[in-house]
Image (cartoon, rainbow, N blue to C red; front, side, top):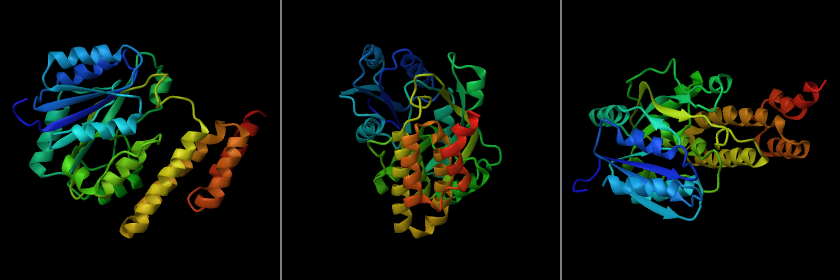
Length: 313
């Protein structure tokens, strides 16, 4: 490309040959054209690589990279290291974007000098039944649109209204903000967006909300989002809590917001863990009582240990 792209779109790809062509197509059909699409093949063993190569040949804005499988966080970080745009957007390889997403977001970021803009999402999935789809909500009702505020103020309000969504695919970010704070995705974690997006908000000076469902999230049975819960999932939530607690200790002005977030996150995680084997639930109970007792409600611990017992009666 002769001109430097204004937006770098980072798309990690791992074994999504059934969906990735549609995801890329939704990017290439954007009514904003000054972007680069960084496709990182994270060691796919299916036909995804062939599809990516075809797109790289078709359009000079598409750049293709290969690596051994390293996971989502490491792959997004690699994309960040290649990104040349003033803004970055993280796109999953099985989802889609509305055609006016980039143009609307970049216009508002540029006109209001924002660190990032955040927006809503909707879900779809030809393999998902209506009951499963109804279980997902990514739309804000009470957050004030087009209201420029600091990131900490914005996230505190969303937490209060229970309208905070952690997905990194629901924000367009000025890359300077990430570079300034060395903000990347923590490698080795599941639910890495829970950490990344919270830290993003807490370190941003100017953000705003666009009340549009630009991001289309696919719900499918074999995705990370819908896979069966394991002990490792809960251990990752505890690790995220450690990182955020350390951050709040260094940046004490954010302690109340971090505490609020951790109470929401840990109670939800502990509640969901009631489906795990008894031995795993005992490990979770021990960790909560040792490290996180002030964050987790008695009711959540009761559900963790006894919900299955009462369900069987």
